[in-house]
Amino acid sequence: MNTDQFLAKSQLKPIDKASFTWQTPSNIALVKYWGKSNPQIPKNASISFTLHNCHTITTVDFARKPHSELDLESEKVVTFNLFFEGKQKDDFKPKIAEFFKRIQTYCPYIFEYKMTINSENSFPHSSGIASSASGLSAIAMCLMSLEKELCAELSTEFIHKKASFLARLGSGSASRSIEGPLVVWGEHSEIEGSSDLFGVQFPYKVHSVFENYQDVILLVDTGEKQVSSTVGHKLMINHPFAENRFKQANENLGTMSKILQEGNIKDFISLVESEALTLHAMMMTSNPYFILMKPNTLEIINKIWEYRSAENSAICFTLDAGANVHVLFPEREKEKVNEFIKNELALYCDNNQYLCDQVGVGAKMLLNERY
Ligand code: PMV
Image 1 (tube, rainbow, N blue to C red):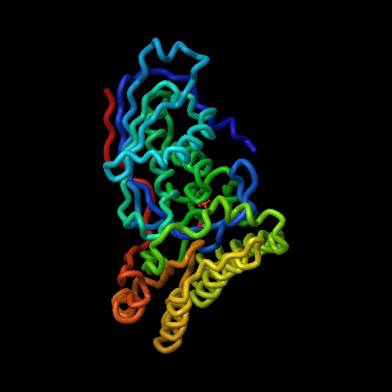
Image 2 (image 1 turned 180 degrees about the vertical axis):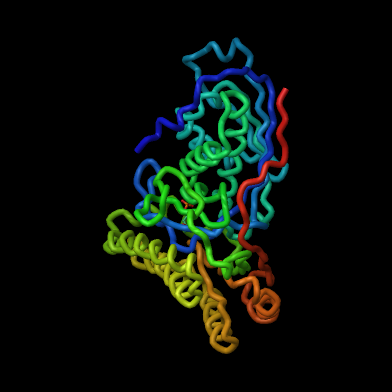
């Protein structure tokens, strides 16, 4: 695998201070990634819808360290402060420190700057929505904005590719949070340009039924995740069904590619729901085993199935590695399904909370300042 392409080019212009703000989205996988090998290489390819409203906004302020500090080669350290929603967040620091460690070969300039990271999410912190995808992709875009200033001309295509490559090293699914509306991560023979190293935009024309596809996230359990994804991925090692699952996921991605191009909504529904339940089945059959759904998750699934058959609707569900339910449906059903959610599904949510979203196009720069 050619990772050399991501080594930073030699620097041209020294910059003392810079500040960049990026808004990057969360994403929801249709064919799931669950299981990896080092360094953050997926065991199977996956595809996700990029979201629009669920996002992170991150500003990174870079201040070049004085020469006296830079000369101490032996004391090469990454120096950063982290604020989340205005408050210093030292408990998030180890994860970000580990991220910087993994990317330092590709971004050696991080040693030269004191970085102050300010981050906030558009969704409530305790919503059970993983913010690592949007959080890490936002930092990756801020780093790439600095790299663009420091190094020779970088194309937008390369910036997106490298940002996805970097984000992946922080959290696998973050590699799918740079572009949109559909991103594939993981090498796959039927997806041109796909790679284990970074996410790529789904390269084929998508049927119009999937345009502005809706995702309403029902917040069934807003507590801490029962199983972190780090632990979850590890449970796939020596899992008795793992190899078949990886094979199945790759086959499912090939099938999904055709469905997305042809617009076969019935097949889309079956595949998306089967993927969600398979992810949970893998957790139920691991050692130790976990049930990540809550009783209300099942109540909601049954209600969705009832509604689908009664109304001849194209509504379906998917799940992350938790109890919350993503309700997916075409834009043409928006009004009716939103009523159904408000009147019948919200009752099963924590404090009746849910978030209305739809597919989005990816990272957006909000501010770019350098001195
Ligand atoms: O990116 P991670 O390591 O948090 O893993 C995320 C895995 C799932 O969200 C459960 C599935 C996916 O493909 O996004």
